[in-house]
Amino acid sequence: MKRAYSKLMLYCIASSNAMGRFGLRSSTAFSTLSERVASRLKDPSLVGDGLVSDETFNVIDPGASAQQFEDGSAVIARVRRMGRDDAKIAIDRANAALVGWRDGTTAAHRSAVLSKWSSLIKENTDDIATIMTMESGKPLHESRGEVTYGTSFLDYYAAEAIRPSAAGGGFITPSPFTIPGGTAPRGKIMAVNEAVGVCTLITPWNFPIAMITRKAGPAIGVGCTVVLKPSELTPLTALALQTLGKRAGLPDGVFEIVTADENVREVGEELCTNPIVKKISFTGSTPVGKLLMKLSSESVKRISLGKIKASKYDSLIKYTFDAQALTIPSNCWEELGGNAAFVVFEDADIDLAVNAAIASKFRNAGQTCVCADRFIIHKAVETEFVSKLMAKVKQLKVGHGMNDGVTMGPLISSAAVEKLTMLVGEAIAENASCVLGGSPLLDIGPQYFEPTILTNVSPDSTIFNSETFGPIVAITTFDTEEHALLLANNTTSGLASYFCTKDLARVFRFSASLQNGIVGVNEGIISTASAPFGGVKESGLGREGSALGINEYLETKYIFLNV
Image (cartoon, rainbow, N blue to C red; front, side):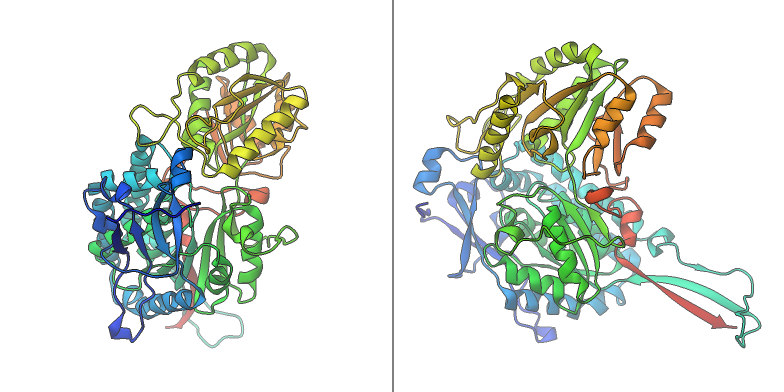
């Protein structure tokens, strides 16, 4: 790709100066914005004000046209390529800030900072949404929605941080307690919970705000400090969040950022193996999650893992080594996605089911870990469901996310387009029928794909057993509830599933039988800050969100008092 940059580029710094009071040199992440982006922002200083480096990598607009890819104007920013030494410095800075933040502030103060951070993000919704759309491709209305969704985690954990439940269930025995063989006739058992310490957060590109705030909110709220490694595909949103966090009152070192792309192996190893780091939270692919489990196990760190997809563009696979053979210990938190089932029973409200299917499947062009992949429709209602679904899908407007009226944007990469093209071709070769779409939209740009509906899809086909991460509805049919359950559970994944029915008894019966951590009944959008989010099977263990999410950043200490 040619590197054509505007003469009017803004050189931007996106974190604080050196922590002189700790004697630590700066490990500053920064970006150089193109005029194409900067001219759209009310406050370009959200991503800094003036630092340049020879070691940078490009951030690309996934919605760019073929001509823009050719002439280089698809490049919307250059971001500093940080290395192992920078990661070490960021960890040291976080460690230096830990005691002051954890022990030198009150829960009320930390709560107030989180609330202020949320307010500042909301005040800058237009700019944040623009940045997010330009680097992730999602339509502007979805980016605005993610600002609301992402700040809801800060609001939730700002409130939760000052509640007794933020202590994670600590207690003191109400009655005297004697330990056999001990000397205390009237002892007390006390259990307290404390912030775990310095945390590494590794986040994906598909939710550039929410995946950060869902982790950073509870961590910072209980007194941890964090080092964030955002996706190399969407670092600008993270840098803007850091700027607003500083303005909200986050001290130096509490929220550090390390940006890296092709050198992510050395950065990832440092973030996972450095003995100062006590907790790792990752959202990405299952193979990489297994790799991080292995790396973190060498120093017995707490770890939370999550899933978007596995692909050649998963940076930690792309730049490291084969992680397929690694296994997941059973005592660690994990949310490792995908391949969700969407079941429509014969008694379902079909209009409601279609609306839920649209919401679940086509948000972010199908690029979310909870998107429905396997549509399992009762034979008695298949014709009606497909007809009404086609009518709704035809109304979707595909285009650049910044354009008015666009309801579906591009895929994140050309590799994703190639994958979907291959999956559709294989499905048709296996006797599936493509009743809508099925092809790339190259006249718009090289990273667009048509909203697609396939019927008569074999449950044994590749597409039915893949997390497509794209706008493809793959439909098969069933006769009985037992058959539907067998199809829905026939996967190694176990994050989310959906089903539509009016039968209340079936609601409880089928929900209990599904092997998933999240179940949506007559609804296609189910994630909220107040609810626990996570999976089972190879989609993991443990939860983020809700009051349970705080526990991931706490350690329990038992104290026996001889009173």
